[in-house]
Length: 139
Image 1 (tube, helix red, strand yellow):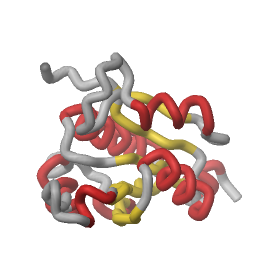
Image 2 (spheres, one colour):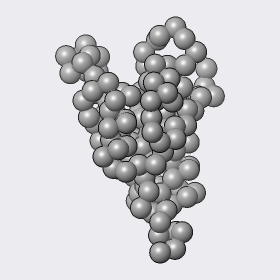
Image 3 (cartoon, rainbow, N blue to C red):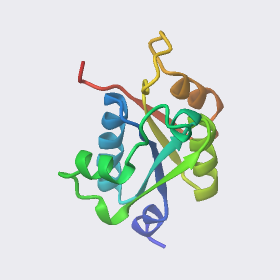
């Protein structure tokens, strides 16, 4: 098996929501996936507020299409929405798919008052695979 064949069997999991940081993480992960030839799996963890209709549901397919309209990774890109807390959901999906890398924005849509969001902080302390935390240049 060549190194190219090996790379195409790998997956990057990227957490997505509607935050600028999530959009930056999705773009960063898409660039990495297209440069390295790995699959990209965009995951949105649906929470209780969405399920209870307190906040709008995220249209993940539309978010990805809008964000990655200029990227050439559509062939290796899939997405899914799963219920649960973001950190647990991303780790569960990474384990289930054999992903070797998780990418998230440094903050999500919640405002915890700290410089780094709770999901990013939990992932870097709990994940068994490498985690990249991406900052948005938009502010």
